[in-house]
Structure formats: C-alpha cells, structure tokens
Length: 58
Image (cartoon, rainbow, N blue to C red; front, side, top):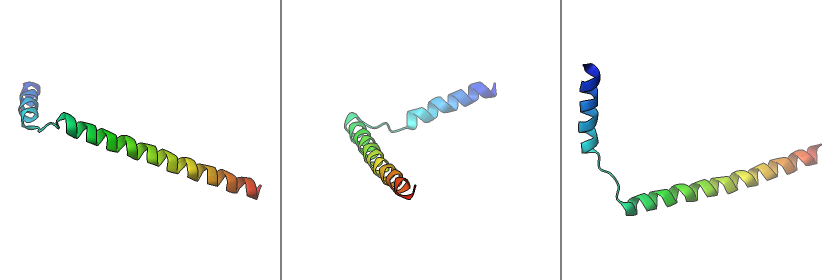
C-alpha cells in the first residue's frame, strides 16, 4: 500500500515540474558540449606537457 501511495505522490510531483522548452534545451546542451570539449582540450594539453616534462627528466 505504501508503494502505491508513493507512486501517486511521484505522479503529483511530476505534474508540478516545469520542463524546459526546446530552445532552452538546445542552449543548455550546447553549453554542456562546449564545456566538455574545452575541458578535453585543456586536459590533453596538460597531459602532453606532463609527458614532455617526464621525458626531460628521464
């Protein structure tokens, strides 16, 4: 019985959620992709520099 009461409250709560529209979703998705690419480039550069530093020491 508690499970069905829980499901009912989940359904009620989902009705209160304000879902983003398509424009907001595209904007947020592009921000995530851009940030991910920038971090990937940053870590690739750091990795290259660390490898070059290790090569100099050995």
